[in-house]
Image (cartoon, rainbow, N blue to C red; front, side):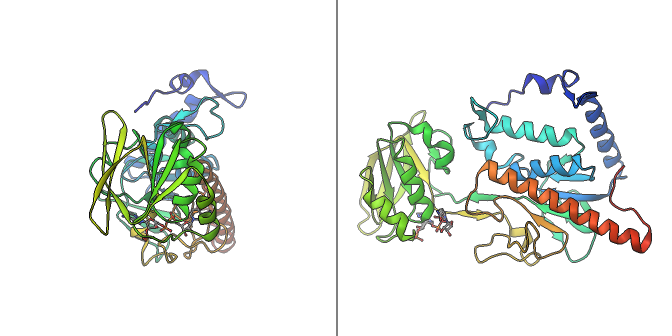
Length: 362
Ligand code: NAP
């Protein structure tokens, strides 16, 4: 895992924000916030962002730049799915690519520079029944006027031997992200849904051959994607089979499959295994508090607003269609603007009624 930081970030005094403001000024502001935070002065936040993928960090950049007191609770894997990715080639602005962990560290530093307080902890309980909303980790309970849920989704795993140890070394959960690394390879894709067929078709641009291993003899995918896959000379189907083992040395070299009807086992030569058996949204803690759709994703009402006024959502936690770092970041930006607008409108409403100013931190 490469965590080298950019020269410019390690030398904050060298970088100017706007014509006259050194980054160190922003950093000292962030430190002051940390100090007040630990002394309990900042117990009520304008907004708490839950999750630290591209959606969460992008939202933090926008809300803290808008001078909203922002707490970001990272979750158990700070940086999210991109922390387990090697090179990211399709995130704009990095013509030579960037390593996933480095990209996420940069995003975090950018959010912190403007005052986002990032806490490496996991939210285990929320109470959205009254405002301010309460969010509890195992260590603390935090309060906020608005909440932005950016907890993402996790790819389903096969749960077989070798899957974790070969992750990033031939086992992938995202063809769009990793396909170009498999030029000239024999590739295996597992699954029979839209994702599996779309990814298999995409992978034929790079691979020598693509085998789709599916546990049944009919597909769940839409007819149009099925037709495309059937017509593609590079794609072959292996019906009613499951993957039972992954073999290789430094990287994947072969895949062991088993016939679910006969139990017969065989080994297929392959340099890559793409697991496309669906995603699970990370919404367990929101059940009973926010409206979810039939698949467990957060149901949005208008723009990024959820079923509870003041709670917003962004990224893969509501979007099962695009699931890209750049789209999650875009959703994070949109939701942050919605949060800001909602708080300002509410402040306006509160000012009219009580002359109290609740939301601006400075
Ligand atoms: P999905 O529709 O849930 O399909 C998952 C596939 O994986 C199914 O074929 C399932 O087999 C198989 N599977 C599940 N668990 C497995 C296991 N443990 N071992 C082996 N196989 C397993 O998931 P998806 O394809 O990711 O699609 C998710 C949603 O996104 C769908 O609504 C889809 O329409 C949408 N989507 C749309 C597009 C598009 O419109 N272009 C593209 C991608 C995704 P069974 O069939 O036997 O259950």
